[in-house]
Image 1 (cartoon, helix red, strand yellow):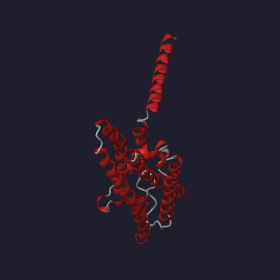
Image 2 (tube, one colour):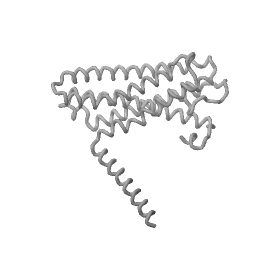
Image 3 (cartoon, one colour):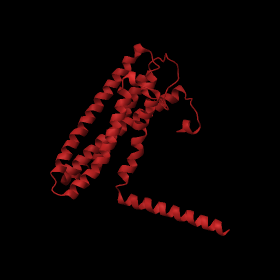
Image 4 (cartoon, helix red, strand yellow):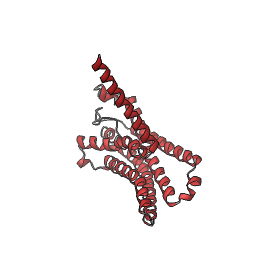
Length: 241
């Protein structure tokens, strides 16, 4: 964001490493939290009477700590591996941030296998989380379809579909960015895909989750109403002067 605002295309080696670390950390934590949220929805719909005991405050704290911890380990692994590679193809990253695939394009071909090993570890972990999410939603949809009330089905679907949409967007675009064959890679396509997996899911998370909260919607409506009324009063005062 700072580079875009000041039209700056230069970043230091240490700054690039820090940027890659935080992006890998936040993306790993985001994916882990999406996995935790699928478990939360599974318990809420399939075992509602046990929700308080299965998803208590202590359990939530432990799952959040596990999500952030896995993101941290993911970031350390990829940052250390990526920046241990010698860069033989210049120092121009063809992306709006320091992204692993773009940095690997600058590395020597014989050193690429080290990062490939780290990538395999991450893909294996991500696949395990993906299987957990799919299994959770299979159980959820089976439970929803057994509900006798259409209102209950609608409420359950409205709680799950936003989360499922973010998961689908996040997984599909991230997989395409990191696993796409070099033959179809292009700067414009890489840019669009990077925005879709790194910017869009975090940006829409507050919208699709928080807007279900009636208190938050009421507070937002009051804020907008007050801003509009103050703007009208300001223009009225200016016109009188």
